Image (cartoon, rainbow, N blue to C red):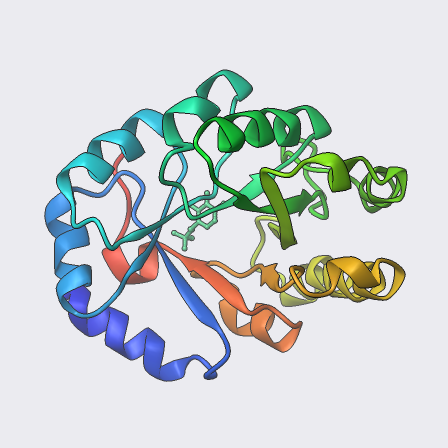
Length: 221
Ligand SMILES: *Cc1c(COP(=O)(O)O)cnc(C)c1O
């Protein structure tokens, strides 16, 4: 069942678009099923849950952190996390840098842009994000690699509103690559699109979609 969903979704994605299977709140058995179908990238949004799953599941899984990350929890995941999608402040980036260096690593990080109409979503405004990049501070952080932009659209069925959220994120991404040519090599990921909006997200330039419920079914919290 899970395996079939994975194959169906992979079959519908253009070649250059990666699938991050969002497994939060789902048991390790279901993740193992997806793994057996060939899926290797999984997204989680709670540190404790991720710690448990990481310990129980195959070591060649690429774990992606996609939720709001508290600075005091970075150290738990720093040894193994593949990408952190949801970096929403310079302070968090500094802490990821510190913990990455302690682990002799460089951790790819995506800067989360706040594009949704809701006030509750975390992230930089594009102005804040640009100011931060222009400050050049990130260049001193040898433990992190600024690897792209992430965003979440407004929680709505209205496709035009969603498109309106993704579009500026894509423009912002392009602007960054132009303005900071030294970032262009590492700036690769455009992380937007979830179960309800990933097709639209791909039209608007996404190259990594984070899909949960369409693979694993509804979550029970
Ligand atoms: C839960 C979550 C998803 C997956 O959502 P679905 O609607 O189940 O596909 C994607 N991105 C983030 C940041 C999430 O927290």
